[in-house]
Length: 304
Image (cartoon, one colour):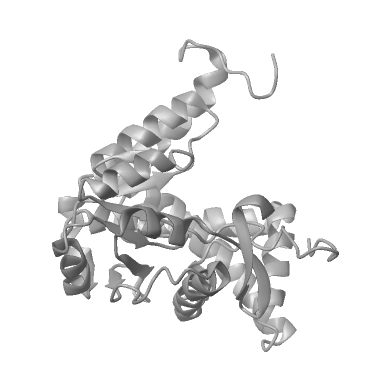
């Protein structure tokens, strides 16, 4: 059996660990709030200690993006990133396994009028989100205010993919495969809000290089392309965990004006400016564990 091949029956022993993980997520989702985030913190600290490859990637990203910080400050931020992302795992379990209505008291939404105004244009809306550790819980809490579809990356494990898709379909109007551009365009043209996050490195073929934290980052061109194909307003949105570790804040900004401009680099730069602005507010909550700068301008060596 190849590494990417899975049995058809979900009763197969290969899926037992997946069933265990799904069961654990259901249990964690209902733990007392402070206790479950403490569990998340421990998970994050263990990952920081033992998953050296991801720690190296995070250290590299932090050094590239925050050169003004001292070595000690960078090390501290790296550790906080792992803690925040460990908390993000239990928050994801909560968002997927619980009814968001019971969590309404934990969220404040600033700037709802911007999304309402964009939706009122009748062209659908493209919401630009960011891969913060709180992303999936954020989607669940956002659904209390606006119905939206979400673009996502399918999981390789078919059992976990089914669990994840069912959970997200309960939260969002529709979960759309990130490769299904026609599906995204169709839903937007039908007047829906579609939420997607363009802050990862998808390779040279679909990207242009635009500045991000002083680095030339391969930035996907899809944001401007979707806006051009649909005529939909593009609305930036941020979601973060508050310092009390009990509550959360959604912040919606006004739709980008004169977007797209027709200049791919200029449009990618505007998107990155928003992403950088949002990350700088809560840098420890961002998913620095992924290789954001893996694609380099021609002739430059890998930074990882």
